[in-house]
Image (cartoon, rainbow, N blue to C red; front, side, top):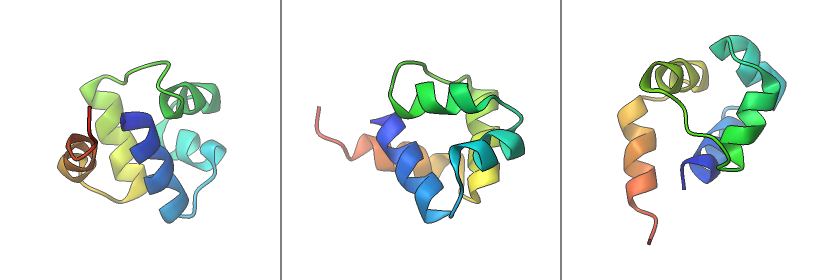
Length: 69
């Protein structure tokens, strides 16, 4: 859920995983783990990622809530 939405938002923003990682001050490998739902970010990291993507954290969370379980 979160990983899929992160990937969609990153692509929409026109960023590579490396670009996002640099702007959010995390590793590209960690971005990959997040997008494949192998890791979950802390709220602080999620905020930095969303800032780099140019979206509000609440918007990303709302998108995740729309996924069927």
